[in-house]
Image (cartoon, rainbow, N blue to C red; front, side, top):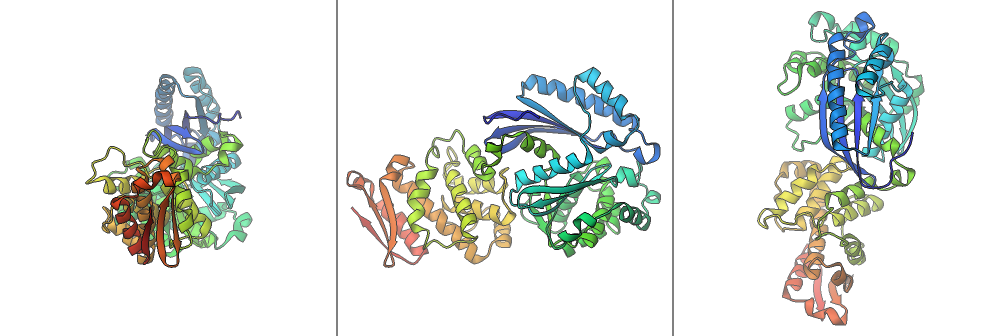
Length: 502
């Protein structure tokens, strides 16, 4: 496969699954890529596989219509590249070759499917793109298959594909009670699920990928009033996840089939996804369950990137992208980190040193995103923006910490727009650490007027219980009462006296 060039570009991905056909356009900026257009059709290509061994007639019609539309959009958008990932239904169905030929004739798209092993590898790479630290097992549930693959500190390992998606095991009428015999289905899953290669992976995180599991995660958040509406990196302990799984396949089954806002064709797959999750938890004994919104589609993009881009930090590139075009933040991040470096020893930290440094650097790259916002609402709007921004490499705790730092870079108020999320995810000590680093950023911004050149002529340090700011001789005129006021605020937070050297 030819690789994507290391430049800003837009890439389209066609994901042709057993249940859905989806088209996503991504904007690439370094190692970060953000979806800017996302459309899916629940065609159900693999809905009849268990009964006929063939693709659904209706599914073929809807899939072909969707692919024709998506090809037209891709051509009109003049995308740099269109990547295609076709999966289990087109591997398994006896009439798949004819459908692939028809699509090629009518759309000029090559939708020949990837192998099960290749699908598992691409899925793992998509997860790694969103969380480079991923370690454990990734499980991707589609309409016709389940892919499992080992993850070792951001690298994909051995993987395997199992023909146990809901359309393959249950069949097309997933919503009928008569076709959902949980004990019988469980036995079929267990018989097909040879997990010898994964037995040594017990007590490792289990990452869940796929639309059905994402929907289950969203429903769990709503039922338990989880205050941060982000599915990426949503974590559950195994017991809690198993309770969700057993509710989905048992007492909650009818609720799921009629859940508001979920398409009926998707809702029908949810009880089975609960059953399969229950079996995986029993067999793999994971340390925790982590839901991922990133999978095959993102894996196709990540796989096509050159090595030099994959080695970059996707979080920092994502922060640069979020702040891109903002002159308030242009060239300011590195001088800001340099200015704050002398305070590292006295600024409280939440995470291990390398991770804390990464998050602080991310905050420095985002320092100018409040440009143009009304000053009375700027802190709140920036907080919300960062809390839900499409940034890679963040747990929910890290995301809350980063958002709170940016919030306090604009205000001394303690109450955020989503205080429930902050209270749940961060301890009092951790909230104070975010407040202190945000206040240190605010000092730098006020003192320099957001000018990187002026910031390079300023210095701050801590000595003998005193916080001191100074400037090069030609810049002492900028050390006014306003700067002294911000220094005092920071000094109060870290219990230091302050001194301005003119």
